[in-house]
Amino acid sequence: MPPAGWMQWIRPDYHGAPFITFGARHLASMGVLAFFGWMMLRFKGADAAVRRRVRYALAALLVVNELAWHAWAAYFVGWTADKMLPLHLCSALVWVGAYGLISLDATIYEFMYFMGIAGPLQAVLTPDAGQYGLPHFRAVQTLVSHGTLIVAALYLTHVEGMRPTWASVRRVIIGTFLYMVFVTIANLIIGANFMWTLGKPTVVSLLDVLGPWPWYLIPVILLGVVNVLLLYLPFWWMDRRRAAAVVTRGPANP
Image (cartoon, rainbow, N blue to C red; front, side):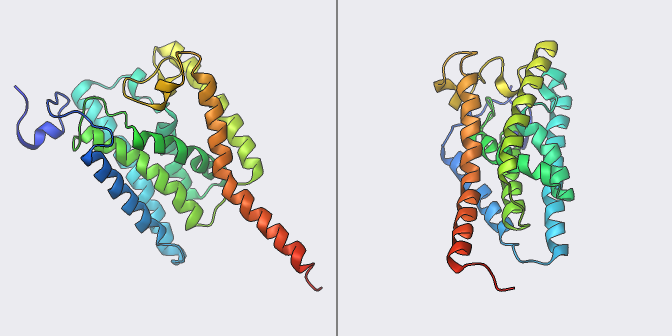
């Protein structure tokens, strides 16, 4: 017999409507995330103490939301390494991103900006919520996790004034590829499928149109490179315009 009342939105034996991608509840959730991001970006120009408190709050949201998922899994379905280790790229970014929000580490920021926008955006658009429809905890937790990663990356860029460089592009591409190799080896050892390197997810995703395994990994890597270049494009354009303006004005007077 299915659980009644609010417990149906927490327990794993969920019998309600499944997650409907781009359904009314999904669109409403994305609207809430967009509004949350807009509110966070309004802190540009605030004093350092206020910005620090906002960064700490975002870091706490990432960590508490992730710990809630681990606690839910441990209590209801059992915590297993092949499902719960933080080896998916977005799961790893939750932890390093929380540290990056607190420390303002430039190298971590580079990965947060390039990998913490494109990847989580795909997850917000096509969440891996399984059979859990909104507002089930698992669906909400998935959207909050990935949405907050996007907001955190944009916050550090827009509010804190951090930015990637051309050298960042090379570091992130090489670093992410090496991480993908490491995760694939870990998958083979523990029988997991983190980062979907050994098979596609069961939900609808971009991988469905990229061919069978393992061939879809090639366009995935290429799309990752393209995403990084596209995300760097605004900064390349700003630098180009700034350099052109300097040439037009001429060197400053000594």
